[in-house]
Amino acid sequence: METATFEGPDEFDAGQYEDDARQRWGGTDAYRESMRRTKRYGKGDWARIRQEGEEIVAAMAALLAEGAHAASRAAMDRAEAHRRHIDRWFYPCSRAMHVNLAGMYTADPRFREYFEKRAAGLAVFVQDAIRANAARHRARGRAGAGSDSGSRADAAS
Image 1: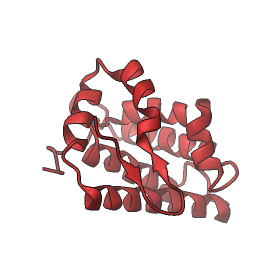
Image 2: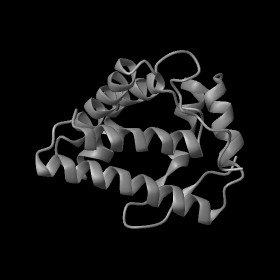
Image 3: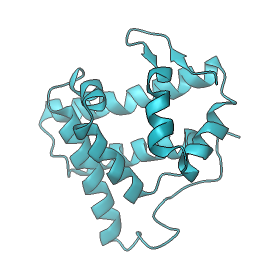
């Protein structure tokens, strides 16, 4: 299987995580959907995905640097943008799934390092903003079956 290598100042080789991802999630619908979508992406798509993702993380780092609270509207809005980014490019990502992913951002050293090299405390800030965003939408009554995701049909098609 061809893997993506992102070029730039922070080169990221997705292939180094491929076996781990396949072992953990290979039997899931999300994994199969991600493989289906990503196998069609070219270099330009990967560049766009990386740029969008980096912009979201940079905005979160800026909020942290400004002293914003993770439950602020701005932080929750960035968390929602992060969820939609995953949903758009990889697999349907409900808010509940996003909260589960956020747990990995602090528990898995590879994810933690990704965030922490951008700003000290960013992994926890992102995790807390994702959790706050999910709680915000639950409080608004948007967490019912089918409405939690906000998922669109494969927007990358």
